[in-house]
Length: 112
Length: 114
Image (tube, rainbow over all chains, first blue to last red):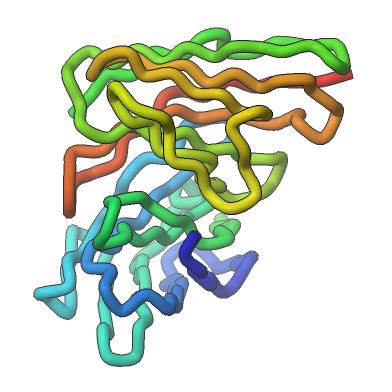
């Protein structure tokens, strides 16, 4: 499979602060990069994605940036709330075969 | 979006036995994948379930251990064969909508092997 590195593995922030999670990858042919949120005991759910023809995408408090040259992409959550507490996974879709490979995950805790 | 039904949702199995997990989708999909998520870990791709042909396995996974069927565009099964405690995990069926399309997950099947 494809190697997707994700940092940090755990992240604690105060409510209202921002959280940033970063992923790096090696397959330069990948062109679709989704982020998933997984709450305890539930299935992963897509929260935002970005395609290689754009550098940034924003949806309310969530934004994703992509640097294809450097092969990294990041998730930014602003004005964090306790309900943002979950495990977040970055992923990429392989250009040939369309398989999805996931990062190692970040456990985010938002402290009220 | 796609509605994915997986069963069983959970099971407790004895060492050496095999269990088949079923995945039913409410619409025809081109891509179906099986993932494993061990406790506290990420999602690891086991294989791509190809309709009408043999599944494509990722490195570290073999057909004898994880045979997969996909008889049509809405259904697939994953069998975990000759189970050991190391196979205790959540197994997730997922479907894709093509290049650049969202990946949807079933609710997962939590297997515990004693």
